[in-house]
Every structure is written in C-alpha cells, then in structure tokens.
Length: 240
Image (cartoon, rainbow, N blue to C red):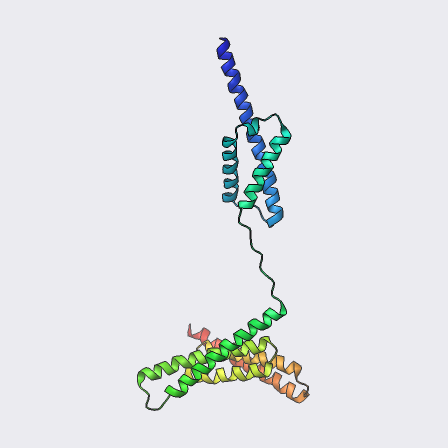
C-alpha cells in the first residue's frame, strides 16, 4: 500500500513538473514571438513557431534537469541561451540597398548603351536586307526586325523622358511612330501607345519652351496626338 502511494506521488510530481515545464516553454515562446515581431515588423510563420517548439522539446529531452531545476537563475540562463541559438539559426531578411544618385546615373547609362546598341544592330540589318528583290523569308525577317527597332526607339524615348531630354524623346517617339504606321493599322494597340507617348513628351517639352508661341503650338500638338490615341482605342474597342 505504501509503495503504491509512493508511485502515485511520483506520478503526480512528474505531472506537476511536466505542467511546469510546459508553462515555462509557453512563456518563453510568447517572449520569443514578441521579440521576433519587434525586430522583423511581422509575426513569425507557423513553420517558424513549430521549429521553435521542436527545439524546446529537444532541449528538454537532452537536459532533463532544465525544467526541474530548483535554481531559477541557472534555468533562466539556459533558456536564454537556447533562445539565442534559435534566433541565430533563423534566416535574416535582407534589407533592400538604397541606390545613390551615382548608382542611378550609372544604371541609366548602361540602359542607354543597351538600347542604342540594339537600335544600331536592327537598323543595319534592315538596311542590308530590305531590298526590292528580297525573298519572302527576308521580307518576314525585315518586318519582325522593324517591330523590334520600333520598340527600341520607343524605349529610347522613355529613357530620354526619364532624364529630362524631352526634345530627344519626341524625336525617338516619332521615328518609332513612322515605322509602326508602315506595319500596323489603326486597330492595333501599337499605334495609340506611341501617340500618347508623343503627346506626353510634347506636354513636358512645352513647359520648358521659352518661346510662348512655340509652347502653345506644342500644346496644340499634344491635343492632336491624344485625340489620335483615343480614336485608335475606340476602333480597337469596336473590333472586339
């Protein structure tokens, strides 16, 4: 009878210790979640929390005296050490590097070189291949190359707009329009795209034009190109 009472007492004692261990794990876990949220600006995912719980369970099994210790300070030190180990193992989110003005200028220069190179290559291919006696295959190749050339000119115009060279952007846009008008009709989206780009460039160029008469003329041209873009879009919508 006495032995049975002792066994029951041990079971109750172990149960109480397990409950105490579980409470401590929950407390530490809550603190860890709060600290993670402060550092990263968001709560940890379910997978991260699961990994933490598994680490605590492993620590408890590896060090059975961890949760039963009667030395609170020592126990707290061990828990904090485990928490630090877990945080170090978590993948750290990389913060995007802020670009300086010099970095942006360099990237813009590289972009222009790529676009200008593509323009030169496409233009030379067209000059060499686009002949009256060209074969059907060459004609197809020339058409596809003209489409690519027009796209390069459009992007060159965008680049010039970005750096404030509005006159150059208008020139590139108009070259693009000339090519696209020779390939596409008004029911294609390629035309209103260029019309609106030219109008946009003319509007910005007019704000820097000192000659008032010329500035007014640019704004009237802006309305003209916007109107063309709208007409094409209406045709496209009707054709659907």
